[in-house]
Image 1 (cartoon, rainbow, N blue to C red):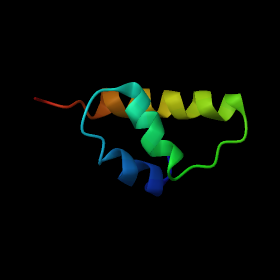
Image 2 (image 1 turned 120 degrees about the horizontal axis):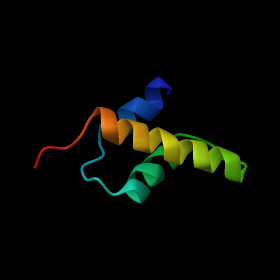
Image 3 (image 1 turned 180 degrees about the horizontal axis):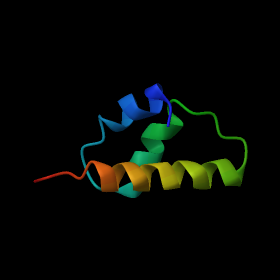
Image 4 (image 1 turned 90 degrees about the vertical axis):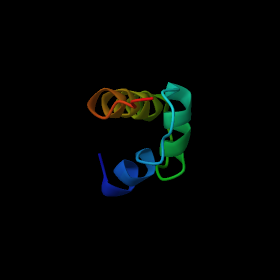
Length: 54
């Protein structure tokens, strides 16, 4: 995970996985479906490592 990806995910304020991927897309260029799946996996990992406590 790059620093810019980590920083943008710190602004993630809910557990909606698609919202996390949307945030990642603002700092990451995706040119294939494989890269999109990798971003989804990154968002899942981040969500598990830094869970929100409401």
